Structures are given as C-alpha cells and as structure tokens.
Image 1 (cartoon, rainbow, N blue to C red):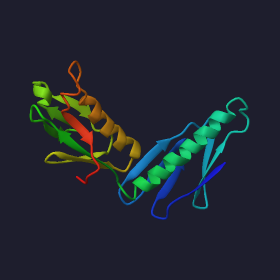
Image 2: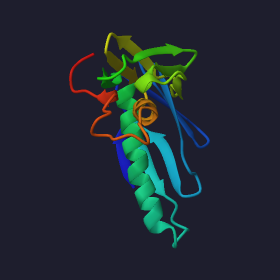
Image 3: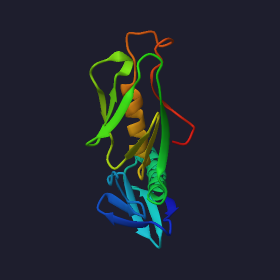
Image 4: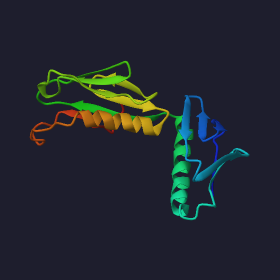
Length: 176
C-alpha cells in the first residue's frame, strides 16, 4: 500500500477508474487498471493498494502501485508548474523553417526536401517558436516529453552520412 499526499494547490476527484487532478494551470486526467489496484482518496491523500485476491499478479500489481504513485505525483506537480523542454534548430546545409498550425508541428526545407515533415502536438501541450529556439511546455509530463520525442523522430535523416548531415532539432539546456 502506498500513501501519497495531495498538494494543497491541487484538487483531486475519483470516478470509477479515472482520476482528475485540477490546479491553477489546468487539469490532468489519468486512468488506471482497477482489476489490479484500488485507488482511494482519504483525508487529502491518495491511497494506492493492490487487490489481495490475485496471488499470481501480486508482483505486477506492486509495480503498478509504484508507477501510479509516480504518475499522480507528476500530475499534481504539472497542474501547478508547467513541465518544460527546450529544443534548438541546427542546420549547416539548408535553412530549416518550422511552424505550428492546427495541433501539428511542421518542419520545412529539411536537407532541401520539398515536402514538409509533420508530427502531432500531443493533447494540451503548447509549443512556442522563437527564432531558432523551441519551447515545449504543458501540464502533463507524458504529453510534453512525447511531443518532444516526436519532433526528434521526424528530424531523423536516413540514407545519408550522419557525421556530415547533422541538421535537425536537438534538445537544448538553454532557456528558449
């Protein structure tokens, strides 16, 4: 059994197998497998417990308890402070241009290609473009990191020497 304190600045609601956490920046919703674990809200705490009647699944249920506790902790943090990833455009051969429209992220002129490379911006993640710097932020850590990974994925250059063609969008430590 795992007990997790609910932040004072976050509100949590439990309905069936879905948890909704609301804060000043937005709302995160998380579903869980109610055949393996029970989640309850009691006195400002999440109580995550495995179902005792499933002997074979005991180890898996314990792992799911720990995973669920981490995910709920991230969700409570995200609704009060955005998760943020900074990226930067790097090119040597052809000038890359990027844009966002209708929940999509487009890269144009990647190594001289005429076709745009496109990927989806996951759920309520926000993308800000400032020159060569990109700032990806949102309330859900899963969605922010998946959006950044999708952007890296569409920048992959195939059938060319990767030591020479290093154009793309890379993770950056600098603020965007």
